[in-house]
Image 1 (cartoon, rainbow, N blue to C red):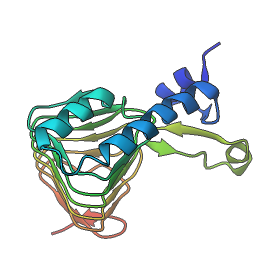
Image 2 (image 1 turned 30 degrees about the vertical axis):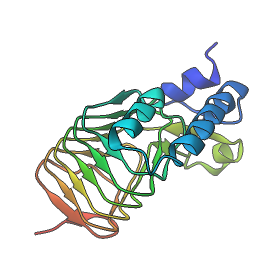
Image 3 (image 1 turned 90 degrees about the horizontal axis):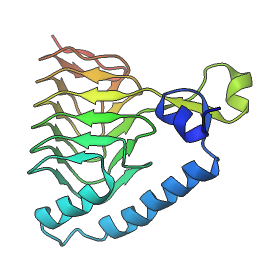
Image 4 (image 1 turned 90 degrees about the vertical axis):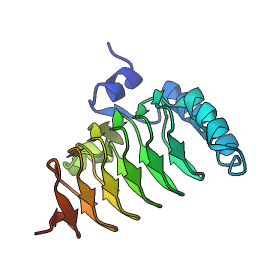
Length: 182
């Protein structure tokens, strides 16, 4: 029998109220209190703090506080990645951000999802779908990346776009739902 955390990490239905999952979230919450108070620290000092919680943090990566996440240990950010103020990453499963990607303020990246069937949803079950953002991507402020989306290298996501499906390499998308800009 798999634990709720094992089911969560596998992208299967799980219950977030499980004590092991709640304990991991408590660790992330305590870390965020510390990290989000570090705005006056140097980028190098904040990078070391990021490495305490995130799975992978490339050299030159910058996340400006405040920053919010579910767990942190499912987030991988490459070298020279930049996240501006007030970004949110719901990382119940893997969220990967490739090298050189720039992310504007208030961007939200969700790997957490919920069943479409109301009877299952009523049980409190949820699941995750990984999000992968390629290298050298630019994501404008206020954009939302939904669960299961892959963004190809060199793509551009317009400010305020709601990305509901994969974005191919080198393509620009804008709007809600995000569509290719021609």
